[in-house]
Length: 405
Image (spheres, rainbow, N blue to C red):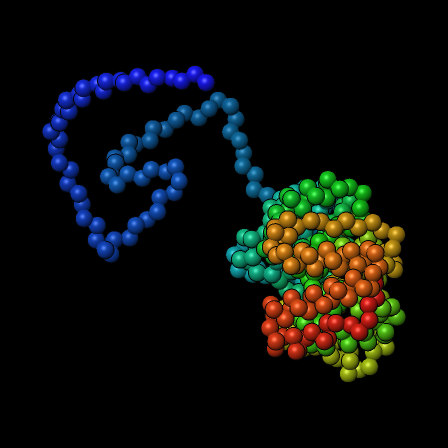
């Protein structure tokens, strides 16, 4: 190998430093009570007062001046077609500041000037209830004020009214998500739309903001037992009264069938089947249920922890009917589960292994492997949730036999 010799370079002589006399600048002391006003970016504000020269009058241009037209908002017309919607969106009021005064019907509460054209093939609305929540909404969605709604059906009531509204007519896909969508999913609206566009041809796009449930529970019905008192027993009676097959209430489901929070973006074909399915189940159950059970289902006992604004059992049952629907009235529909990378990154190694073990057991229909998963899951629960929690819930969320959904 060739070696390079180092040459010694003489340091240049230091240049003499010339010190110029400068006039000392007097510094002004700032009082402790002096308020410091932040300066906006790219704006310089001088502390000295400057004289403003008088503004000279400019001669009017020879071209005719532009007339400013002030548009008056007319009364809400009878909107029947998509063209009417695009021309007359007076039925889409914009809320600013505190909760605005609005009319009773949802069709008068859609945003006055939505950020996307109403002839877009994908129309996703975002529900909010208070003025301050509007600031948190995603610009890819249509703001939807639902502040005056008192329906115990919550999001499902919005689905019903949107289905009848001209704002969804002509859409290839539409849905209504909560104002907490980004918080729960870790996803922006543009990312959701991109996943939908990149995977065309499905009737419904859904997601599960809580993937750890896929690792720890047989299904979403069993999960409900730890969130709402006596949930499984009340749901079993609801299913019996509604004429639904209750075998899936304790069945082992794959992670691909877990859905939560009513996060659906779907085709009109899906909504035309799903909404009547849910309404029929609710009406039939209400007619046939024992009065005490019916009163319990419509009570606020479901929200004993005070986490859901005093909701009854009904919305928690409705949001879990998706899997039952897809196996019955919606069995001819195609579904796509949207991936949530941010939520996936939160899973620890045990949760990832537990979910994979359960999925393999479900795919191979191996009761032995499913039993191994239950034992591993129980050990994990005892280490993470503690003895008191396990004594209260572990037996209730562990069915006596292995069945696959």
